Length: 344
Image (tube, rainbow, N blue to C red; front, side, top):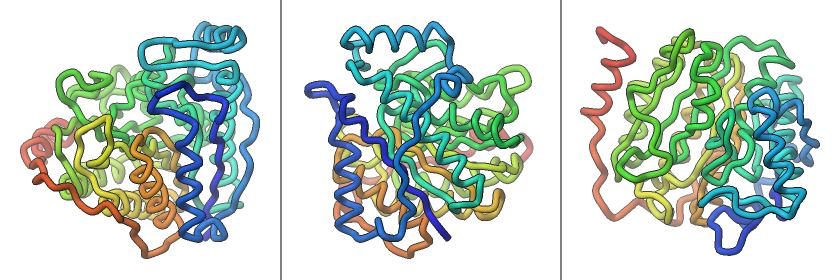
């Protein structure tokens, strides 16, 4: 089993004192080197991105705005999101690297993979940037899988602590993409979307599944939801390819959230997802980096996901479990099952 790793650290896309900075991917790579996993991976440089790949999921107006802002030196696009002189080209490269990952897996040259790209993408909607994101990398990869490889059913699962509002927006009326998001959902927490009742519209009704967690949900709650809700939903959909928005900011130590996952919990989630891919789509699964702002948890989470992709029975968790007790998800899970599997 060969696992792909593509890195596009976007060192020229960084902003003073911003949590989404140029040190994130190097911190992961340092961790991978320390734990001697790079020799087990198929390493590729990132391919150049094409504007046509971005146009499949974004409007020309959005693309032009980011290009113009970047060419004129960059600056803040909104309170959270920035652009530098290099950001447009680097955002294109992030999209290209994700599409390249799909190509490598579909060709059979690799079994599965991970793409460590910046800037992240899952908050970028069809018509707007936001939440540190310029272009929606994972949405472009899903469309690439469909258009370039003829796939009919693509699963996007987002375990970032923030709701993937951009990905949801792009595929909200599309039954060919099942979008599942597990995220913190509480007052004043970004982006404010992702309620259980957001399930799609038109032909896409029922193809969006949001799991809006209260604060403090950890390893047990995530495992329970994956077993009792997500696995049956994926089994019913029968995906041909699985794309993961891999955000490691649901770790209990992340400074931007209040979730309760440990690195051990992330390892088990990654193993579960790899098992799903092996069961339903011949192992075709690609992890794409999103959030994660405590570097030790970010790097350890990515390492554990790569262990799972490589089939290694190893877990790296120097941080251990959270001190506080975990929030219970039984009532939430019951409500979600009633909503999505009526009569069950």
